[in-house]
Image (cartoon, rainbow, N blue to C red; front, side, top):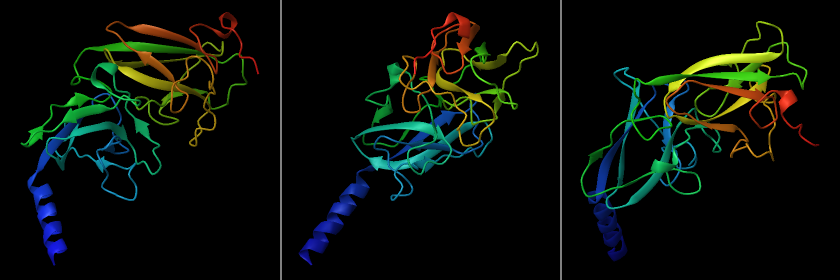
Length: 253
């Protein structure tokens, strides 16, 4: 009986020392159609047996700012990230958090709770600040001359910004096997990305740059840090570097 009373007192103490924290993420520049989640770090999960799932967020007023309120321990340190899509084994489209507002091995967002409820200001997905009206155009030119190009063409994808296979088709209007797409993105965005040779829903046609110096974890994608001016990225499929395939060193196998 004594142990039960102590347990109830402990649970009551924890409940009384919980605070409600409201998280907000602005999805103005990222496709939210697969669902928007907060997960990772020590933030927990709505499915305790699936810690990678995290908590789904909602946008009741349709303004593209998704939110969720979580009861967290008072006076505690938490880390987390925003992501899109379900995650049963830590897969999914995780945001790339800039270093100035991230911490630890995975550059997670973080906060320290106090003793009162908090509503955090919205941040743009993959940014330290809220989404701003300032955008830039990023043109990707992908040289496919080193490989046999799929009849479906080439695609830009991944990184939590460019979606899944098929979302961002590239075009080769002059038939020189250099495929191009221009996308409008928020200024100062940091994001991963990759190229696909074809439209493969299982990512099997994704370029393989594992072991090369531009590959970043966890999926061996490329990475780019944007500024405030339009830029052009020139790439060769499956080869790191800025330039056409003729200008870059081939990968030794």
